[in-house]
Amino acid sequence: MSKPTPKEREYILAIARHNIPIACVAAGIIALVVSVARLVLPQSNEVAGGLTGIAVGCVFFGLAWLIRRGTVPPSWVPWIFATTVVACVEALLVLFWTEDHTVLLAYVILATIVYGVWLLSWPAFFVATPIMFASSIAFLLMSSEPDPGEWVLALADRKSTRLNSSHTDIS
Image (cartoon, rainbow, N blue to C red):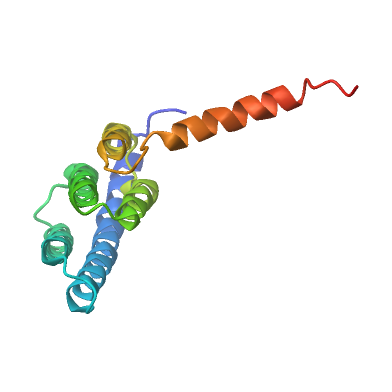
């Protein structure tokens, strides 16, 4: 794959400048809806998590506004978006660690998978994704679950069982 020409790069950045604010607004809406639901539901007493989510939603709305307004240079747009997503993932991981709700880990996995589509920048993707992946594994291993590394053992056991079953003797 060849490096894009300056004209192609300018076109890619124009697409990013158009699409990333849309992704930011969508992420902001999701963060606000989930956070307000956490604050309003009678069985939920997690005020810190709800307020953190509202702050995250506001950050995404602010980022969308700044990019649409044109105050952010086009070459910075993917990097700022990647940094914001990493910060949000880290905030979700801290909440996962303190509140121990596995649904927060599902949000982290979803954010890690989905944000790359909107990024349109391989360098920013290759910097941000390993950070999110490594911190997700670290927080999972630090979690207070009975055996946080159980998924690794299950995967290894499943592969060894699959390998061993192909070499079994029928006697």
